[in-house]
Length: 93
Image (tube, rainbow, N blue to C red; front, top):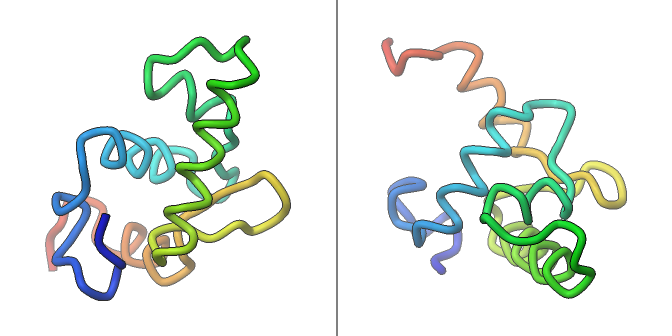
């Protein structure tokens, strides 16, 4: 997975990571947690190992600059990306 600064966009991520990023965009300021991420990935959210696997993916996205952990266990888009989504919801200018 590329670091955010080295990628053109979300399309440079694998399909699973693209799904996580789409869910984070949808969650907006509420943030995304590991259990919800497991559901997004089609994993059993009642399985502790699957939830921890989802948490590891979220942490990896934070390390690479794609997400921020606003508060423990809550992952959101960086503030600059949230602002971009508000200004250009349809991708227009």
